[in-house]
Image (cartoon, rainbow, N blue to C red; front, side, top):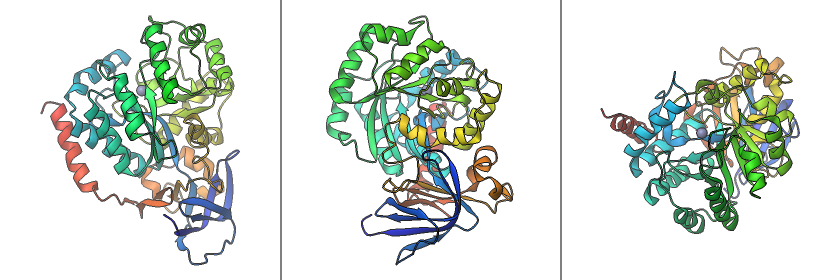
Length: 422
Ligand SMILES: [Zn+2]
């Protein structure tokens, strides 16, 4: 918004770059959708002033791996293992028409904004047709959050490289736009290496980041080594999970300069093996957090940070601090997506993706003594008072301001009933 100035005044500001730090009684000035200054006593000079007394002010959260269309399947895959989860996706996914994909993606994206997630990678493995893919892209645009649309192969097969080329060429060509593109194929754990090589060729030609689930599987017990032997290690890869990979495989990821997404909630619920977030960090892989699947795990970053912190305490690794976890949820997540130049911290020049949490809610009273600890151990989506994406207010006074919220709410319920066969 050219010409607009917003001054967020007198907050308990948490910045995350280079490391999380608390700046008491600090102002954040936003100009033309970007962070202009962070400091005490900034002049309002005609800006719209937002009083942040009794507020924590921090960068928006970054969800690096989420199947957003699954918002219509909440809780559909709990108390089951990964195989049963995939069976549930295979059963319900084909029932989604393009309009259902639009509704579920928009509702899922609004759920993100409501809880302070301002950036997400949508691993959209619901690309049964070009219309399905277009619907997901349209919904991410309509939601108003920062998103990386990951064109994904449905678990029952489908999708096409031609459609990847079409979308890159015609819809998501601009890597500076609010919605950008990645490619989300099956990858080496689930497809033969010759197939992977063909997919990587397309990704290279289109200059797309590639993201996929990775694990030791019967197809490839050592998938990262297999990629190396085939000359397919790349810097622009976002590996997801990797719990069952040995340290030397994770070292190959680190050495290649690629990044990772850990999803401790879904990984624990679906029995992916022991937590991997701490191990990835220890081995030097830039690692963000991912909700992954609301079929099986909570959909907000507070729950996910808690899962990361608690899983880290029992894992056979150096313990992660609250600051470590908050950094994964913000700056490291942005870096994992290749978006650290524009989000993940409050550094001047970045887009103003900002969250205000209420310190005067009953569960946050006295949190001023350590706001970082409070955000990671105590806060929940109800505390999210105000959310801005690139300086645009998308939540204010605890309420989403999206014009279609009522309609989306109705239609999401209809889609959920339809795909469940009721
Ligand atoms: Zn996933």
